[in-house]
Length: 67
Image 1 (tube, rainbow, N blue to C red):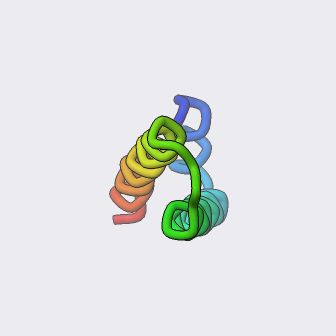
Image 2: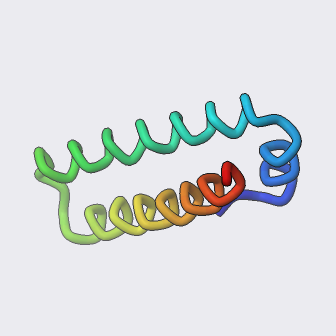
């Protein structure tokens, strides 16, 4: 989850918010590739999927700030 400092900074500075959005989108994309090509055990895959879910929630918050 985004911490309060990050949320405040992203509200004040749209450039930082947009950069944060791009970074999270890239991280999600890379994690999904890792899952597809993975030979990880189920526990590791579950952890990675939870992180993707958390990142998508962060993206939703940042997208809402944009509007």
